[in-house]
Image 1 (cartoon, rainbow, N blue to C red):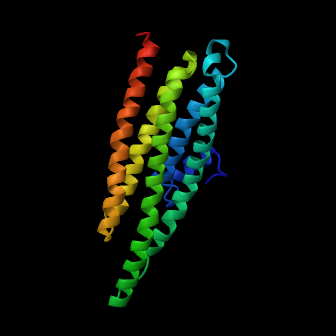
Image 2: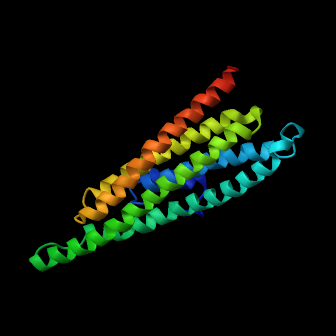
Length: 209
């Protein structure tokens, strides 16, 4: 997926091909969200008005770049995690032995298929943390882009949640299911609230309040 143009990615996404799907789309949207933060950081660098936060912005840009790379890689990782799951669904189930083997393979595949979107959700939380700092320290002329980035990161986080739950719902390992879903709930609660605060702040700045 990483070698495709935006148009190719969208064409593939809208086709009946199994990948990319919702998880990969979430990672891509999250990457765009943090990229918008980087844009604001780059527009802030070198401006006399923001000399006092120059070093802070440089640090944020390094974090942003690392996170953008991580989220972009997760587009491919999501596709890779879905492949064994799709294979498991296609296994025969005519005999008890076949059913048992199919279930074993399916349960193993569900772990990877859940962990990748959970990782996407974690990264979206990191993006929202970074965007909060950009909102406070970045140039005012591009602060609206921080808000857009926060909205993107929030949407990607909530989308990743759905991609986790559709897989954990089929898990028979209840302890693992509980661990994953508990962390997911904590991420969603913390970072949707923070993203909303960022966007509210940005809107106030845009309106001159």
